[in-house]
Length: 159
Image 1 (cartoon, rainbow, N blue to C red):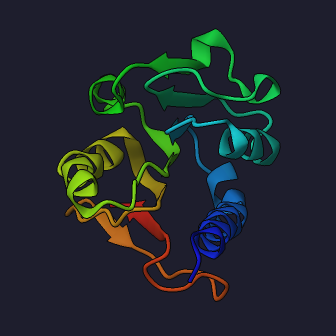
Image 2: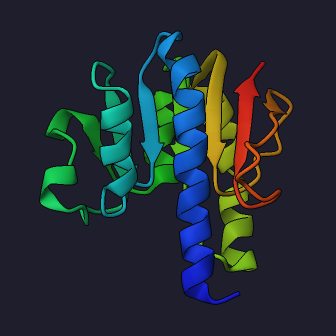
């Protein structure tokens, strides 16, 4: 599969999953966390799905397209591994992370801290959506929609 096709499938999976979990997330209290703002495409989609919800975005530096930028009070800059720790206990309704690189060695480092952060920021019953697998005892893997190939993207519920 070409890198372009892989990219399209990843973004389609992300969109399909976020659209499917949106109704449930709307029934939960708590902010939505976007770990990895990037250029702001997903953040912008989350704003459309949850117009009345606080959405906090994290990233190393500002790279987002202007209209897709969160307000200053909803943007946390710095190494996500460090900055997101301050939000453990935030009781988020949804935490989304698409911060994989495709390099096994780099993703292994991310996977040494990301599952704990994702479990820690969520309220009980909250949902984690991730491009990387989140093996953690407090996260239960949920089935994917039929449009998403196994292993492409992941959904979890905080126990």
